[in-house]
Length: 325
Ligand SMILES: C[S@@+](CC[C@H](N)C(=O)[O-])C[C@H]1O[C@@H](n2cnc3c(N)ncnc32)[C@H](O)[C@@H]1O
Image 1 (cartoon, protein in one colour):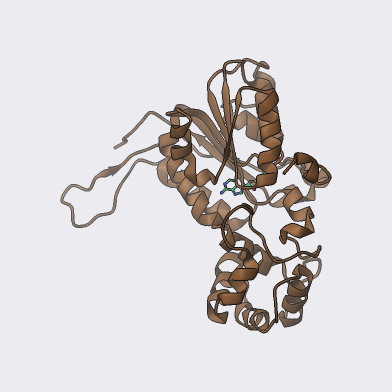
Image 2 (cartoon, helix red, strand yellow; image 1 turned 30 degrees about the vertical axis):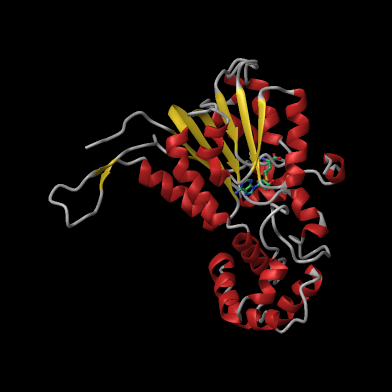
């Protein structure tokens, strides 16, 4: 797939300067001279490379930037960048493979890890990908179209109860049971617009300014791409992947993700006793990260790019303090 196939779909990068500053461990980007930073960095969600391209401006000639994406169209764009910038190494895989993929590249630990979670605008804007309830396409929703099962195949075999559980858990959809029954009564899942209309008709409580299928589409997308499981893996592996002094910076777009990142950073930035009543001397939980940081987009950014309104950037520095009493 050539990146030209997707060139008509562009992505406006969210929290651009803030994320690159955080991953470089700087208060603001203006403090960092261009082309000055050596070391190894990771962009776990390349997309169209907005964060990567800005980070590369600050990296020195001998630095390395490893970029991940699940999406073959994003990878086509990343390959083009790697062809003209030898600092860039491309991994077509989930960021849940972080430490294994780094090992395969001969990299032990890195100086900075950034991720901008969720879907990109090109994925949403291309109806054929099946992510959007505004544009028609088959109900696919896979980020990695080279493997796995599209939502349409899953819907055809799942029970109404299992579907309702997914809508409730990943979409926080209060009317999950009746929506699931209506979806299961459909003849096929060839059309995102038909699916959205079915959900709309089954939904008893439309909110102004919000399509009634919003939460159900989010839920199916999160489920089919194992989004929360991948985020948990990534966060967990970031502990081993980051050097002491290395920086983690993660952008999330909904509360299910943001809560996980917040709780992960809280848990690992406090040295605490593990709660294990069976042990006479409970082991001490290591303190892996420094004080968690949180950044929201400016009003100006939200005005210019409404997609930024629900974004949160969180991160922290990997410390070398292993234990704290
Ligand atoms: C919000 S976009 C990133 C946009 C990017 N920062 C930019 O400025 O162009 C999220 C990207 O992450 C990718 N992605 C989502 N989950 C992933 C995962 N578990 N592993 C690898 N890539 C993932 C998606 O395919 C999508 O391209």
